[in-house]
Image 1: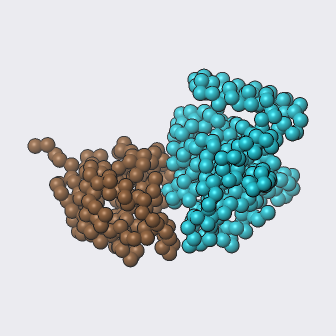
Image 2: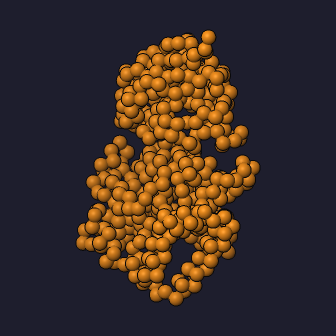
Image 3: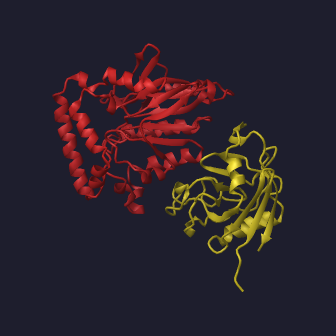
Length: 171
Length: 280
């Protein structure tokens, strides 16, 4: 029996996005992501950081820009050979390479500079753990929404782009 | 002239775009490199900065992207370019676009190098909308039409075939060629009248015809010129080390900034030349 990659569907207020996860190349990251999906963490979160020509980022804040509680951080797996190409999903993090928790982003362009180039602080890169298989048209609409500042946050969509629910389609 | 420092301490939210040129960075000028890194730090702190333009002669010489790209990870760690790439990458991740244009020194700079920090190579002329106006951006060397010798040289150097030929030579050979060309240029410049090394006014008037304003560098003579009755020609300055032998050497450069009032959209943006100054 062939192992099928897990597939997750994001139902958003701008349409559905279907993501195929690469469990083989990013096992810890995919397990971490699926845990958040199963617990309902992503339900009601928004894409709070959208930069056209770069990426759309979400999975951490609710519509009032309050940060949701997260689990322990997951190890960086960006040295898995997967590239931050257009349509891929990767984990967001702070400067600490191993600080990713629940926030993720979808690349809207080939972002080579986010790829792993070495096991040092500046070169670690961002773990790519899947790709969008349906819904790039939804993402195209999302990336061009008007954005502005919200307190100390920049590039926040003026109208919330909401993930109503995240569900596992196949596992 | 307003100082960049004053602008960013009094109106940080208003700075939307920053434009620089003619840094002529090299490992032989560590003060200039530090000043550029300091500018990037300032940029990182600007909440509304969306674009940084580097309009040519960023580097004193560029013999090809491979000089850096083929280095091992270890070699890169101690390379003088690495801190620049790291900081530019940080700026890009923060949401600022970095747009790089060729100058007459670094015309062999490629997209592969720019991709290291998420930068984008742009080509002249580049049209930038500032408020209700269209600004034409270029490096400036194409405007020195009185310098016939240079224009011939430029045509040859910008030719794809020449570039392909050069990039196929070994790095050592390319370094030697660059050295020879620099020597020749210095000799030639010593014999050229000052006026032919500046922008030809007629060339400027012709060039500005398709836009509302012209912005360039290259001549190292920062100023605002009234090119035609209703159109201005802005010239960015080179990055200079002043008071070299004093206890407080400074780097100074005339740069450009596009500003717009907080909460206003880009329709009301304005352009100004300002002075960036840093004590090294």
